Amino acid sequence: MKAVGFVGLGLMGAPMAANVARAGYPLTIYNRTAGKAARLSELGAHPADTPAELAAHSEVVITMLTDAPAVEQVLHGKDGLLAGGRPGTLLIDMSTVSPVQSLSLQAEVGGKRWAMLEAPVFGSTGPARDGTLGIMVGGDQGLFESQLDLLQAMGKYVFYMGPMGAGALTKLAFNLMVAAQFHSLAEAMALAGKGGVDLRRVGEVLAAAAVASELVRRKIGSLTAADFAPGFPLKHLHKDLGLMLDTARRLGVPIPATAAIHEAFSAARTRGLGESDSSAIYCLLTELSGSTPNA
Amino acid sequence: MDKKHVGFIGLGLMGRPMSTNLAKAGYPLTVFDKLAEKMAPLRELGAQAAGSAMEVAEKSEVVISMLNDAPAIDRALSGPQGLLAGAHPGLVWVDMSTVGPDQSREFADRAAAAGIQKLEAPVFGSTGNAEAGTLGLMVGGDQAAFEANRDVLGVLGKHLFYLGPNGTGATAKLACNLMVAAQVFSMAEAMVLAAKGGIPLAQMGEIIAASGFVSALITRKIPNMVSGDYSPAFSVKNVHKDLELMVHTAHQQGAALPMAALMHQMYCAAMAGGMADQDFAAIFRVVGGLAGLNGGR
Image (cartoon, rainbow over all chains, first blue to last red; front, side, top):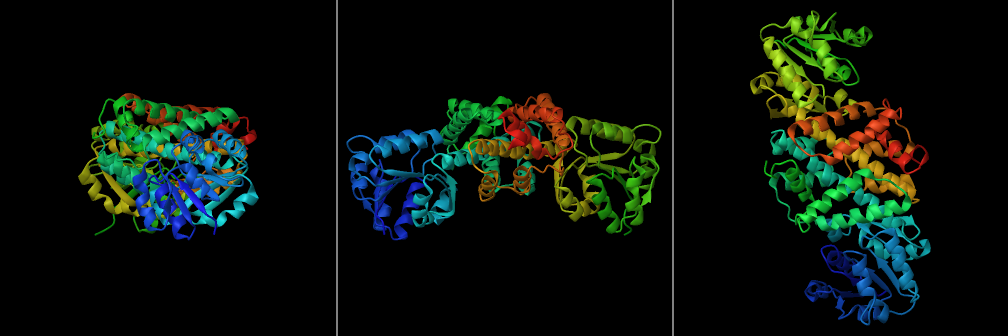
């Protein structure tokens, strides 16, 4: 089996890497903060000291990082992936980035004669642990097919979307609807709260209605309990909203609701809600309405 | 105990299957619709067709109305042939139309002045739910009057939520429809963004269907956007009206709802574009048009 390297052992990356190890791939791991590697070592993964060392041991390098600058950071420099890897290495970037950023990463690794696929995911930490993520792949189709087994170790729904950029675009279109559900739930609750209706009862109504997605059901609980412990940190969704608008501008697509939501998320970050869950957008809307989240 | 005499006013897409369920459940039923031909199928089920809303009120212990908007309710209430002209002690009027909380409270005041109880009970659910008797009812008004009519309301809906005084049910309904409009509107933006970048709509639809944010509503609307068929289940003009109520209500209450306001403007554009009677998923055509897609594709 091909030797795999995994960079980025965060909330999503750690369980994904564990599934790669369990599927039997010889695995090298790297994380900026070393402590996160311990449990993976028990599964036989070899921790590398630098991205360069990881690349030297790997035929396929997977990155699962916060954003494009974080991917750039592990690629470049004397300890970077590109310094240690051989020509013919394949980069599979699973981070959420924009199509333009994906194309630019491809050009950079292409300079060292590496190949690349983009493969952003949908699903939270639960599906990451269970290996049931959705994966939206862009890049060369033959290359995609040669990596299907590896991708299926992490995901249940693997979609080939088209050339480089198509996977990133799909992920952004996807998260657009995620952001809108967070935001519209917050507006609905702010309206009901200001009108003097018991939020718990409204939550029960919404959970029984045709709008009740899994996401909406989970977040009704956060809003009614005013518990904004991060599942999907607001600053990350704010970043994604920025990428959506940038991408839409390049494609000539007006997305007015997304623009409004982006501005609301900007305001929420300014108020220090960036580290909270995205459902904390509700705090901004109640503030704008002159009430409190516990109304 | 004998079943209550029930009256039903407004036999449209929702009202007809709802009143049919009451007839089938064995309630003595009197119906009225301003279009006489709509009463024929109910008459076949044993319902009496009345000549006016007043006659419905006179013959009933509880009267249900399911009408388009506040002006239509006003017409059914007022005048010598109106519901209030048929008021008698003990009558309860349950209005299931979607109106603003202020309108609902005003109707409750008028009913009280005529000596009758008024409940609001706007519903969520499609015509399919109306046929199956599985609607959700968001009830506002006197709690004892609600409890006394649980039997009748339970024939129409599976989920009965009592929320508080008149106005609270109307507010919950608007909050619910805000999310309805937002899910379809954001899907339109997502689909147009994907389409403009070369992703086939059908494939985007498959991905949305596999997601953690897919809802029963989204599942129903994916095929509309993929096929371009906008036969109405819930029309543009109705969503436009509800958004107007949300924005108006938010304005009155001092709540800021930027997304609802924006969607209201976009549905104004859909109305101006001649889409009033199409399904509200046709907002995809408006968003697509802004991006220079022909008919949204």
